[in-house]
Length: 514
Image 1 (cartoon, helix red, strand yellow):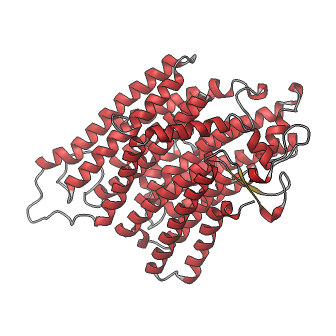
Image 2 (tube, one colour):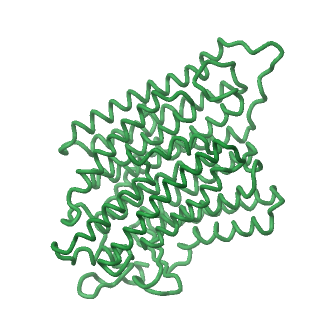
Image 3 (spheres, helix red, strand yellow):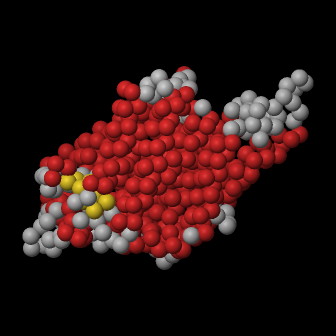
């Protein structure tokens, strides 16, 4: 058992109260500890990815209590990949928050930021459904504090809407956990994978109810239509660094769907047969279409980007809903792409917001630093719209290839290609209004353009754009890795045998397995 596996949870959990108690009135000290902590998280996460790259499943038993009785954290290729993605994103978001001064516009930004990371990383690493619920609540509370950071009536209203929708999800989650525990007597995911298969067909009503409720909960987190209403206002009104960090939040829902419905309720399980292709795939296709139509119809720049997040999650969930190794591999590749692209766009929105009268998509006077900002927007928009040569285009090709030969191939291809065209038109319209037509609008007499953004703001956004470029350049290596992740997900025996030993059914794990 390695103690490194719990470090991504413990480190931000210790930093947050330290920042509150010892550095509450010293923003400089808060910044130093916050950046240092996130940098260490990146290093630890990279180490965990390398440790699990060969298929090793890492296990940490809190208090040395064995599963299913104790709390366990499990690190495999999927969970370590997601914590590395979160840590890298958090570092660039934090750099932007500091350089733009957002962290100093309200209280406890850095403490809440660390608690948010604790919740997200814990959700990726936990091997227990109840603790998944606990980490969901931790990130919900922290995200609400971050969302209303620096105040404002509109922001507060959006935050309340966000909390209400997620509280509904939390309530459904508890119902699902109660149903599962009543039927199986456990909430450990590896143990559930064993016990669900032993329930007779006549006694599976409770299991089916729990499976549907869990899918609803994760669909709320992933902003799946028709459970997406909380996202546009919440993300559009949140502070820019917070919205950029929230680019990974919807991926927590996607991760939970992948984990639960490949481990506990796999596609071949008769109890939940039809749940994936009958319900999830059509909803994902509708999400993709509505998200990109929202991009075209948006009248404000921030809402345009928020709807693009819904569209990108639709793309991810379409890949997941295929529930094939090729589909999951494509979804994971696209998750990395859409996270960085969405975060970069939200930070670009802030550059425009701080130097423009408003974010309405109407021609207004040019902003300071328009050339660099427009260039960054051009690259990020190409990425999010899925145009070549960036990784969005490659991700869509992988999805189309995974859907080839399936029953709904025509629908998948038609909606993916049609929504891509719509998003191209939407982003082109926005860029034209914000940067090109602005050149024809004269500044009012006696007014000067505002000062250009801090250099480090451009560095943070440029870093995310660079990661998108690297994701494209090394697409072959990344896709081979995501393919190996998918292969591990569809062969869960090593995961189950590492977490919980079942005599006579699974081989007992060796020391090397840990």
